Length: 490
Image (cartoon, rainbow, N blue to C red; front, side, top):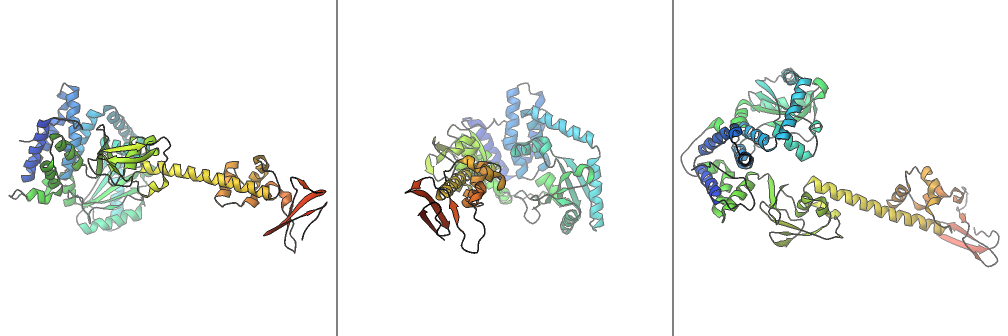
């Protein structure tokens, strides 16, 4: 009654038999987790012998369902080692060019520094020994091609730009020594900000426990590495999951108590009205760290939990995000700040004149949306400052009876150390420079000499009144005019 054949999960799939097979598997697993161990072992064998399958379409189908269903199931029960091999085999089948490219780069790195891993292992042991920490074992390894590829895709960077491709596991006798070891490596090596995670005090849902940190070690080009610090028992759980500490008791609710995620899957089975829903929702639940939503045409998008319709719009296309003015979620108009849920169908409403709203920054969850909105907001703010600054400088010129022209400001650029006319106006608009400061830098003769009495500044008029030239005398808070060759009020 276990699953033997699952097709690739497709949004419009009507393959009832596949959904029923999955239903039977999950029901059996809910009563005895060992059913899943057998099915995972069977799937691993299938993937290892996949090259014997003649049809490319069938091979791709098997590899896709391995990534969608079996690898996440292995992770859910803590079988990291099995999960990693399933992912690697599936990745090699689905994206052979990327797999070969990453493998070639890893091979090149090994040639460049053949004993780098062993050198770092030895260095870690020495560091911990100096701090009185007894080490059982230090295990260094390269990260898997699939995990490297996912990181490259997530960060949109090339292999060479990744901060680390090596991980080291430090195995210690007791839990207390894990924290001692953490302090020792942080004391000896430069830490990488934002990389520390304490999964010992707060284990993952599958029981995984370790201290994670990132450091730069001095050996050969200051390599950046990931450190996982754990006890032997924690290591066994991390590698083999449920098989590391098997406890089996009769009773149909035993497994659902130990694995809450399984209860959620059973709820999906019980509530799904269509076979299609079983397949889709099971995949969504297995990837619960993310939110999976659909376009009206059935295209699937993965977003981080807490993502909003704005995040979705930018995931579809930057232009869709920029011109978004509304959204329908499951056919109903919803606020743009509403967090999306697994399985939501999202339709983005756009308008030709739509523009990003800086207020969106208060609730968007993805870096892509945040960067795009922030860039637009900064450009809009600069333009506002530019316009306001230009208007303020022009007003200052008019107040002193001068015609305004941008070419008159060229002397001010050098005097005020501004790279361009735009930068000058932005500085004024933002308050970094005063408009009269610009005026005096552009027309230095307007700056009055220091006097004991209240200073006044004279400006040549643009026109004449009466029989003589109009001279304007300005002081703070007042201006006066007089007719005559040089009439000054003071």
